[in-house]
Image 1 (cartoon, rainbow, N blue to C red):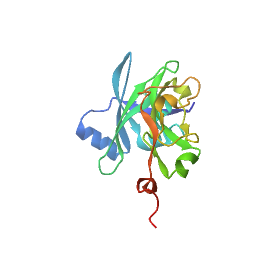
Image 2: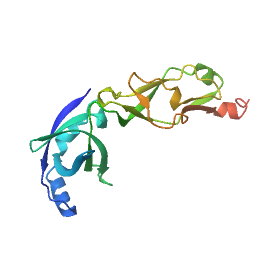
Image 3: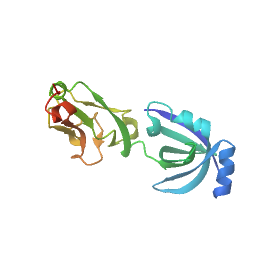
Image 4: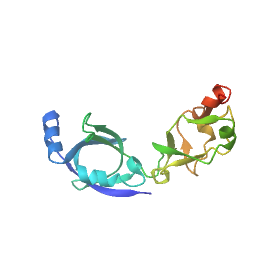
Length: 194
């Protein structure tokens, strides 16, 4: 499990003007919330936050947030970005229990070669690029591989077909297609023109 410590300051002044001032100073306004926790307005250093979530786990990194001496075990659940610059404008930190399952999104990587599909001049069409999973924070995978080697023409791989590590289950619609096939240009036109 990837877990880092991040310092936060509490008692920040709320409002647009105060938030803009914080951002100019290199800090990001944020809120800590969760079951049994009253929402706490905090601010974190932008550079430290980027470092905290730049590892393999990304936003699924479990963070020990030290808010002026009070520690919260959190995950960054929602990040608002500036519409033009793309810089982080606000963060929602959700308090998590390391022993209880959470829902997280992880990237899907296609592996293997759909030989039968390719030989029929059909194409593999990836429908989902992120998968919602449910697991304890320590078990959230960095990514999930989807093997397309056995994919046949006209078939698909659904969320329920994806092999997940022990302790991890799919959180979304099990019937949603992850990968499907479609006729390629040559197959649609009946072969190459002579």
